[in-house]
Image (cartoon, rainbow, N blue to C red):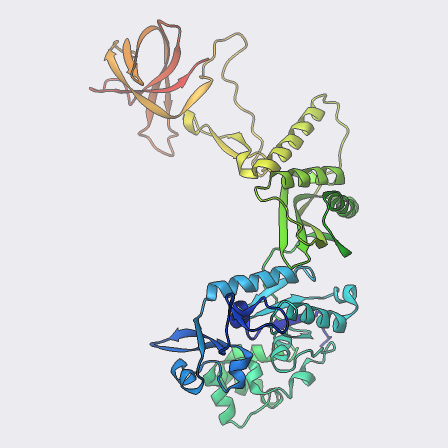
Length: 519
């Protein structure tokens, strides 16, 4: 079979739980645990069943003969004194996510290999860092400088790179060389359960190469099809897709700086340059960006991200920059460059095809364009869900005649609002509808009509003029029980209301509601 051109860099942080507790520290300084000096070896304990065991341990504890999975009581008996800290898996997962954020500067396709590993798809990206060997050395060194024990390797499949990171760190497998490189590794590199390992040892198989020489049918019958599939991926015969932790962008442009930048003017110049690069690509492809994200990678490893959404496909770099700056100005926590940004990336997370622009003789077209741009600016400042528009619904019930949707969302069909009156006619619908109809108390009743006097919100009103009824009922295919008779009334003080009677005429005790107020 042809060799795959895919390249995966696997990282393994074998002491992540203890490194989280002991970093940061200066070289030569005493060991510290959560800020306090510690002379005793450190282990992290976790409960398994009804007993505590060693969940993780630092290098000093390992040199004294302790090991992962050992009963904690045995570890205490072997080493005194011993510092024991309970495991905090949430904090470890958050730290791994932070390291993954830092690794985004090398490739946007970063996948978690929980609880202590990462996969980086570096296909086509290694040349940006001087080649695979230089890139691997740089990544390992920069993570180690932050106080982590780390191992890594590069191969054509994720499982091959993972196995080499654990058993042959810094290995770089040439394309198609996975089977030859993996063969000498012990069967523990298969990363299967204890039952499968015991079966392999019982059969006298000590290395991955010895397992690979057995027939697939034999292995499948004894260990299952999933074991054979995993073995094939490990040897490079099959591929396994990675699950990226973040959505992959449709398009991307980034700029790296030899010296980190800190000023707002330099950041704006960089964003405008990146937006121009994206604009050229979008123009050639006939597309426009709908969801744009800017990522700012700080020199200390922290990553800041902001995203903007547009109501229609956007190509203009000046407008992109203006919306991004609008978003930056609206941040509750302003963008902090710290020691500076060494990488700025602009990602088009969603790009769609744009229909060719046709010349329009409509004088209102420019006004509509300005309104759409205003909506984008307001959404960038206040959030897309806070800027809404009304979409008409196919129902006669007043409170359900429209629904509010994000103004930038054009997934709804454009519907024309039905014309309710002719020019010169009085308004048939109130300008203000209450969110929910409010019940009123009828004081004096009129046969076949609304109350002659009623009380609403602790105020009493006398009815002077009445127009109606207008019967509105729920659609027959939805419900046959909701029927209302609406009346437009005017009080002695000149106030105009929209009332309705709940239920058909002739009921013994009709209930009246006020739903709207005319201007």
